[in-house]
Structures are given as structure tokens and as C-alpha cells.
Image (cartoon, rainbow, N blue to C red; front, top):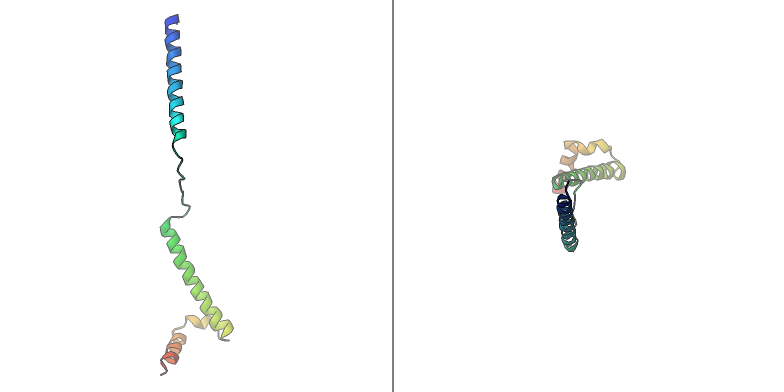
Length: 92
């Protein structure tokens, strides 16, 4: 390589370094935004909430009927049990 080419290459390197330095300064000047990454999508969260509510309702009915009410805990899921409760409420 000739001396002229070496000088031109050195100027090119300096130019590239200067451009990179300017870009870096611009990036540092911008305020950094917090990017939120969701582990669970919103639709999955809603589904989980619905399932947890159903599970807690079932568990509460089992405990209420079986433990507190001295009945058979599996009778909570029988139609006759709920029909009897409705009859009591309506006073038939």
C-alpha cells in the first residue's frame, strides 16, 4: 500500500470512529424507556383468574356443606342438594 492509501484509510477509520461516537452520545442523551415483558399473556391471566374463582367457589361449598354442615362433602355437586336449598329459600 502506498502512503497516500494509508493516510486515506486512517482518515476513514477516524471518520467511522467519530460517527460511532456521535451515535453513542445520541443514544445516551435519549431517556431510556422501560420495556415490560409479560411472562403470561393477558388472556391467560384472565383464564387463570376464572379458574381460580371456580376452584375457590367449589372448595368453599365443599367445606361449608361437608365440614361446617356435617354433610357428605361430595353431596354438594348433586342436583338434589341444590334443589333442596332452593326449596328452603322459597319456602315451599
